[in-house]
Structure formats: C-alpha cells, structure tokens
Image 1 (spheres, one colour):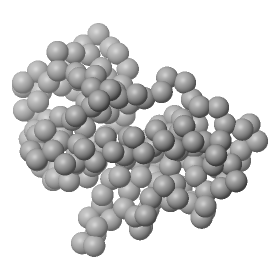
Image 2 (tube, rainbow, N blue to C red):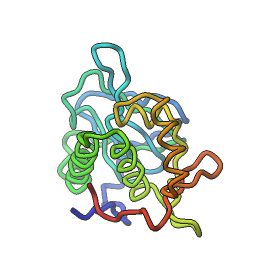
Image 3 (cartoon, rainbow, N blue to C red):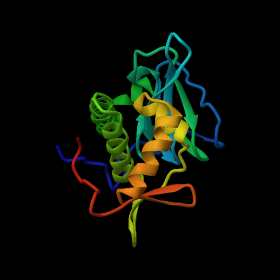
Length: 196
C-alpha cells in the first residue's frame, strides 16, 4: 500500500475563521467543528481508563482533525509546535472531503502499525511513517522534522519510555537511524516508501 501524503494542500474556502496557538497549547474543540492545520504540527490524544495517555495521531499542514472524526472520549488536540488552524463548521464539511478521507487513511495506517506484534516492529514502522509524513531529505537520509521525546514515541506505540530508549539505541547501532540535535534521521538503506 503506497502512502500518499499530499504535497499540496486541498483548497478550502478563504472565509474560514483562523486562530493561532503556541507549542503545548490544547486547542479548544467546539462541537460540530473540524480544524484544518494550516501551519504547524499537532497530536490528537485520549486517556485509557487507567489514566495512561494514548496518542491517536500526528497531524500537520493540510490535515483535518476534530471530535466529529472520532468517537473517543476524552479527545484533545495538543500543539507540538506553534500552530495556525482554520475552523471548519458543519455546513462547510463537504468542502473538506479530500482532507477528511486522508485523515481516515492515515488513521488506518497508524492502526496497522499499532497492531504489529513486536514492539521493535511498531517503533521502526512509526519512525518510517513519521519520516514519510514529516520528513525532509538530508545528506544522511530522511530527517523527521519533529522533536519527539522517547515518552511521546512510547505513547503512540503502546510501550514504555525505557523500551523506546533501548530500541532507539539498538536501531542506531544497526544503522537504521541516526540522531541529530533531538531529531531522528532514517537512513536511506532502511527507509521504506510503502506503508506496513
């Protein structure tokens, strides 16, 4: 299955209400409203009954997120960078169908990664997914242009921070990744252009 992250943002009406948020802000989610990420990166998240944070996805320029796309409660959107969003009200949703379909496809890709049996496979696949979605080519490979902590990676693949730290060290020794200034570079011989 070929991953198809857009290179151009789908066209939406120019009269959308826009707002800017800072890193670590939680974006208020009015009912029956979707958010289109115009600039920046967010993660959607919830909590298990035990109080463990669960990352539902990472979203960037052109992506659409919001409670109407999920039945999960609670549902929050956290800014990982400074973020500019447009609010899309329910009477405008038909104009955002391409972005909504892309959201569904990416959610299924993340679910497929989460269902990998072995933790090291989940971590490797999420790094490949992040490199496809947020990466930019550099001399050594594909730089994931997000600063993610080991804890944040653990939350998205359902493991512990200690396990992620150990596996990242192993991946670096095996030549799968390289670290550079709190970023990860997926080395070209290991980078896959296809989804799991």
